[in-house]
Image 1 (spheres, rainbow, N blue to C red):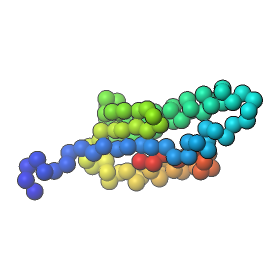
Image 2 (cartoon, one colour; image 1 turned 30 degrees about the vertical axis):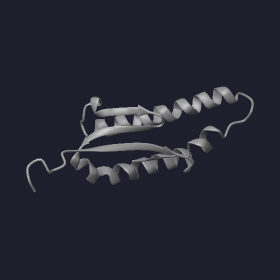
Image 3 (cartoon, helix red, strand yellow; image 1 turned 45 degrees about the horizontal axis):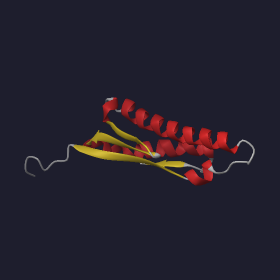
Image 4 (cartoon, helix red, strand yellow; image 1 turned 90 degrees about the horizontal axis):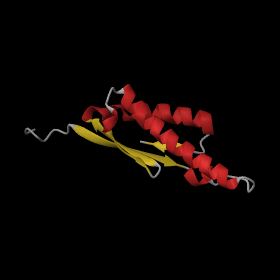
Length: 107
């Protein structure tokens, strides 16, 4: 392997699944407030997961490249690819306990 061929970084994308069923499962009374609250919750959830990963890996917040549109991107060291499955399992377990599979975050 020549110098410069080694990957030093990776981009991690976090994407949420099950949004429509989660957000639009709302009764007519107070629908607007419920939609706003659920939309905020999803954004907050993604932000929390992204910041949790950065904190656990002791990586500065400036490596959160983008968080919006119900997904995020993290600039991570190349070794993080090996840890991705570990984080995915933990996130899956926590979200299943909280939402019984109605929403999930995929890394």
